[in-house]
Length: 217
Image (cartoon, one colour):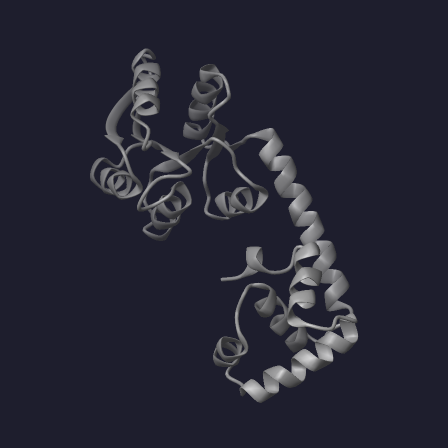
């Protein structure tokens, strides 16, 4: 039986190129062509293809959003993300969501075909440069967490992380179920321990160590 594939890309030329590439291979069958993430998700639910090649950057839903929903609904389709570029945080998130493969659009078509066949067999395919950057980011984050965690208490670390993630004091207080005054007291202690003088300096300190937005939920 052929490997069934849904395609999703908001650029018509790219979509037609993918269709032509897969149609030229006897072991693939394209069951859907979609121009945005919502169409992709509907097609995955309807056709339940073996694979879905989904552009990382699309209107309405991007590739990670589609992957997140496929993962949440426990759909059988394995996702391969197609990207013009991908940063380390997106690579880490793709791995966390169980994405089967990440392929850069600049790569040779034969590598995409190789990726799809490997992912269909249950293997992972992550573009090497993206994987290397993701590993560097993870190592930096682990080092930063250890450094800050050795200085701050667990509650102070959590507040510093939330500040670095862009939350204001009121929102932090709501999330941690404490008063704003308590958050402010912790922040003063954090400033003293980390030798920073302002919220901006705290955000910079945490961001440089990989603690902040990438960890926010």
